Amino acid sequence: MHKGVVSRLTAVVTLAQGLLAVPAAAAPGTGNATYFAGLGSPYGGCGLPQAALDSQNFVALNEFDTPVDHGWHQRPIPASMSNIIDSFDNGHDCGRYVQVTIGDYCTGTNDDASGQPFCRNGSWVSDKYDGATLTMLDSCADSNAWCRDDPNNLDLAQNSLNLFAKAGQPVGDLRPNHWSNRHISWQFVPAPGYAGDIRVGFVQSAQPYRPVVAISHLPNGIHGVQYYSNGAWHAAPMDSDMGQDHQIAPTSTSQGTQYQIRAIDASDATLGRAYQFSLPPSCADGCGLAYTAVPYTTS
Image (cartoon, rainbow, N blue to C red; front, top):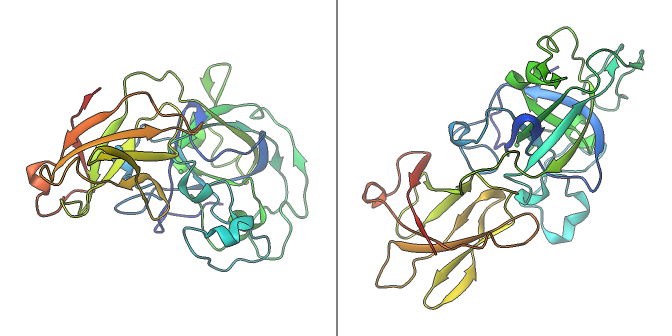
């Protein structure tokens, strides 16, 4: 089964060869895997358009841990309801990679029918696809059993399914005949083969009075952004629960389009550099594109 093209805000976790970028469980989690065709517009749930992702192999993480309760809840989830936060973690697991391993196949009915068990009238069996791996990146907040009754569900990018590999070779035909929302296990990992540095861009409608930046190409996810303004560092507020988007402020009131930021990774450590950049002239009245990349210097 698949969920179709995602029209909701979807957080994206990137799937590299053998690894996935999604929110982490304390230990490898086992759940059912579903798939979807692509992100909504203009952004996925982490605040980046699909074209700006590090990889087109990505996943959606569960937003709410509310078994049986398939209703909608406030986003970001307030501290008073922290017991229902699932692996998306209010955007704090955005930009991370997760290694996904294929598990057993269901011989029965394995759908998202409310109030019904997974894999009913059948059993879980192993086959030649067990053990295939891939690394990926994405949020899941649909009102269905997959996203609510299975806390370790991952929603995988459809085009990634046949890229899972065993012995270094893609399996090639996992979908459509060998899928049936298989069991998977997954865990967070650092970005595989990381090289270079972060990417910085302004989001759609960003302007001098509301400079919202998107941070991507991260070595180990992003837990926050700090901006330097009027002689001190400040925590930048996240844009809703889109974990890679943060609203910053200029370095001084006399330099209204000059910015300096630091990024904090999933271990709550700064990346060790400060990044200086400007709002491009094309964004003076608001950036028209979903993502406008900008160059920067470091110190």
